[in-house]
Image (cartoon, one colour):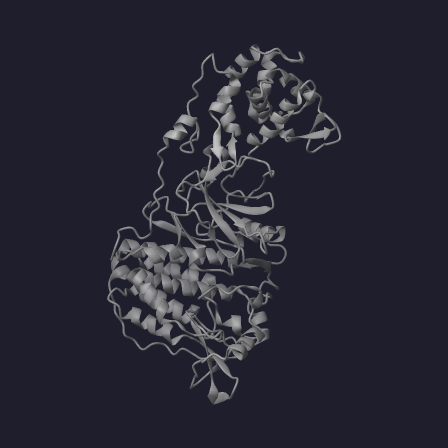
Length: 617
């Protein structure tokens, strides 16, 4: 059935280019190259020899500066320099630049000294130390008054800095311009830590470059654009935090919110808070956020770079049909549902036992929001991870679903029936329907690859209320038997027929049957007014996670995984549920006059508006 690897591989070359070797920097390994110096090279020129080239030009990270500016080199340079201020001796100056114990919390002058050496102003170091103008005080600004140029701190523009007295204007401007090359932040992250927000000055040289093999066109979604970059290894500590994902330590994805509707602080804070609550530190199948920042007017998030998303995987890869692949698939289904349950019922946020419980929903489960990361234990397989919390929400137990569906863009192809029903609200059940659609497409791909998946998508295309065909998983139909203007919602017969087609397939093992049973009976269900009965409702993420765990455990037997058990059993009766259309759907039908199918036969009643409101309480 195709390749031996169940998911596509992305090969990232670790070979440096000749130009990088010649320029004295690398983005590979630990990012440091051996320092070669001689008595003829000034310390300023030595610093230049090992500058890094990034997206904004040259820069030096603190770790690189410590590598170049060793105590011996700094001491040798200072011995050749007569300080303009004689209050400190050479050992004290060296300790200020290269402290022997960096844990003391004393002021740092590493960046200051590097800038002085680059501008051949080392003799002023003691003045900077005397005045307390250390690395943490940067940046400085130049205030022009007539022909004079006074230097001041950006954070305190009220007074000039005495340490710049005696400098000519060219030297002041050189210092001011080049300070941005040494002020790139260090993106630190430790295992179990929450996502940090980093502050990037609008002039700062960012410590990354575009990935060499990145597509020229950025990956644009509805709410942001994703750019693949290579962070310099000396600018972050991400690798230590991602023990469960075998990621390239430099290759990172930056998601920047769109300039228009979604690029504001409110949207940024909303997503930032969600990413802090739900991350890979809480559940392996949730995306781990490495950081967030604002640069200029743009808000961005930092993530590990995935090999691909699930949409690309399903379109391009033919999985082998063997027990190992099926066990991998079972692990991923259970993992995704477990991650969704972590969002729906975040026990890790209820540890105190006090106050109202709070619950979340994702709101945008679809294939291109499931990322594929290389597995740390099985490098030829991947871990499927839920990402993109741009539409997610987190509310008290009394309000988590009270968000009108019309404010939420429907997931293409996966939208549930309540999007068109009067009183329908975005709830945890919304996520259950969408993940059920994803699971059915995933199983289709697992059994037949991209060809089978494409066939399924085409087969379920039918007329929708907007007057065109689409591949959503339910139908809205008229019901003339009950009068004009009566409509019913039903899981598409084309979907039911496809499931029967799968059950008759030669590869339809007990594993496939059991997952299909869950999808048909507990997930892809039109919500009914059933007075608390078990039928006509969707199971919770917790219940489904338990069921998928049992299925995963049964996969220990090879025969359960792959031995075909073709069953041509009579398909379950799919209820047609009479619905009251919401204003949006009714208006669409009135304007477009679509040729909808007419349902004949028994119907049930959908949930009423007050039942939708009470559903998640």
